[in-house]
Length: 239
Image (cartoon, rainbow, N blue to C red; front, side, top):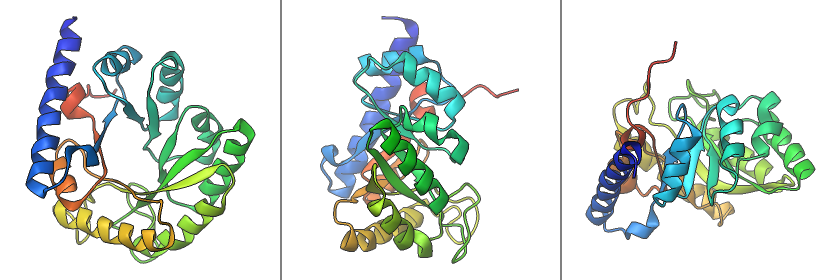
């Protein structure tokens, strides 16, 4: 085993312990929470090692990095999640490898995803990204639709050919009433998920929590946590 693989294995074990402890504290079964490792800025070789260590879900946030990496790792039994803000001119490429897009936040994006998914003969899972720092009709600082816009967008995804409505995603906001209140933010997302499931019962995925706040996300009821730094290490500064 290489030094890097040893490092990744040790980090994964620590994250696994954190998730297991958070599940136990919340009275949840460990199987209720899926770990997604965010591999952005890290090479395909790391993705390959993670796969060998049992990771099955990986996430990327920039298509120019993700597309070649996904192609290089196409032989691996991985589910690829796209978690970054997505411009419509990148949709065709992203649909080529992403099994789920977690950052759906506007109708124009839904239309573009549907068109390319149909063309590619694929079904792409979609999460509505919720901006808890947005006003009633605004978009968030880091993308996302305001809570008031979820229902309309969800209906649009549910009706769109080639797309599957899987649930909701959020990033703990840096501004607004939930700034510094991660637990409250994730609990709010769970309330919104409950509302969504009244209409779309199968949309039960709730993606929340990252390296610093995964415990709060698990406590609130998240089904998926997105962890990068705690597994792969501190990313080198770009530039």
